Image 1 (cartoon, one colour):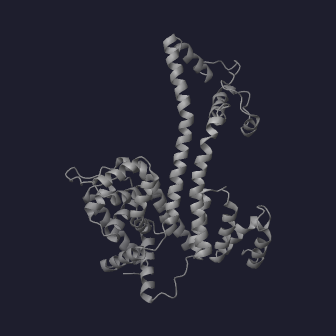
Image 2 (cartoon, rainbow over the protein chains, first blue to last red):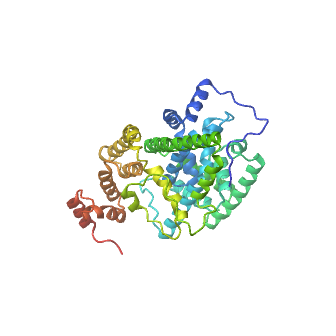
Image 3 (cartoon, chains in turn cyan, green):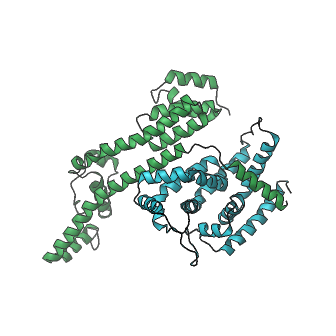
Length: 198
Length: 240
């Protein structure tokens, strides 16, 4: 998938950026480490949550978070205050995700083959265990999707973002987002039913 | 598979990754270290490229002003072997010869094709070892490396805290890895490697721990050899 970055439709109104935000973005564009630190402190949880959901692997997600914030000073030069900085960070994560998703998918496949998956915590109640299993199954099923469909599914269904917002993040029309989501769901249903669910 | 189940799975994934309590400090420190390295690299590159570009621009301007530009282009063409007959001897490098050590590092150019090798040989000499460069370029290095050590120091401190204060070995392992990525040959890299091995051991990753301890036990690293040996003995022979 090629995601060109944050692209809004021509009719989208520009958001009023506060002076503070403009100043922050200017400092980011000047590669001010303090500004990167500030943005990191404000948004790293959201970026990490998205990265974990997308790649399904904590350490790969951490690498992706690292890459997003290292790339931020350069990427922010293309930021036009058309969306929130957080949304912009997610779009950077989408743009850098391919390699990490691939690596995490390979690692999961290897772990599956070697049956090295760590055991669940036996102290957890049944419901937590069930949730873990479902999440793990869905992550493995996501591995079978192309990256664009995977991104669409994670953003729409897991992160519960609107298709408009996802369109902003991925830089494609809303209709395309919905089509990708439709295909993703169809494939996921099939993949999960092969696992004996549904 | 109903939509409900897919929704439940999505919810499960959301809940599982909502706030995993992951401490972002290691990644924050990694980000800062990477940004710092990037700045140092850019500055170093500029320090070399700007004088070269200035020389080129000045040379071209001088050539244009004195009408010697065509002759200069011809000379450059010859230097990169354009229009030179194979029987002609290779042009001498335009820059002073690099120190002996550098010459040993680079394989010597084969005599039959000196014309191709000459420019590529000259380039690293210009970039890596300008004879007059060390005094000015040596000055900023300590300050930048000092700043970098600060970031490394933070990484080390965080890892140390996770390891010895919180006894959170998974986090400590992340920390040692982050530190070693940022400063693979740093002042505390040996300790970090050893502590990393201990974390692997604590986490039950015996095979990795064994591999990590091996260089210490064999004395290759010269640090905590006897302890490493004892730990390896405790671990027993590697599994087939």
